[in-house]
Amino acid sequence: MSKKFLHVGCGSQTKSNTTPVLNSDDWEEVRLDIDDKVNPDIVADLIDMSVIDDSSYDAVYSHHNLEHLFLYQVPIALKEINRVLKDDGYLVVSCPDIQSVCKAVAEGNLVNPLYISNAGPISAIDILYGLRSSLAKGNHYMAHNVGFTKELLHQILTDCGFKSAIVAA
Image (cartoon, rainbow, N blue to C red; front, top):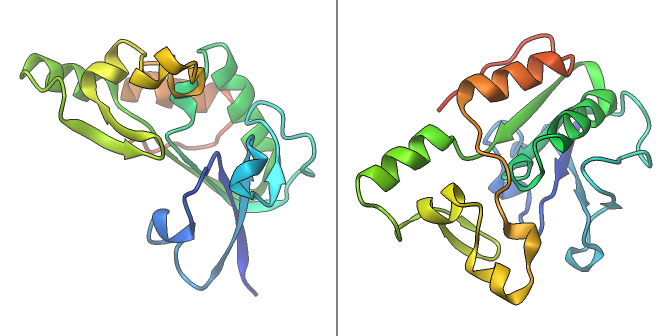
């Protein structure tokens, strides 16, 4: 029996872009995005996944989503994720660590991309100031509103009811 994972805010990313564990044949991917143009399986917002039943998924994969929310929205999103997870389910989160970003800026790395998003490369300076060049074109989604440290993310996960959290670099 395969397990199901919810790939939230995936844009054009596919299962092959997730973590190796979820990329195996043991896992069935269900794609959730706010934009129906990327053909998700479910159209919903990360902070309101009420279209999904409680305890529906074995895992949730969130890659570079939480930092696009405002800080007050992050616990709402994480509580929604926790709600749709089975009791023994788990969440895999990937987001920029603001300490690493600041280090890159301090070392003079202002333009080299720290990661490549669906909208293009995102540099340390983009993340640090919460801006993308696309903001000038009205793409407010790409703004990075939250600067996470490992400690902040761990505390928020704990506060949102996750029984354990491993926050790695």
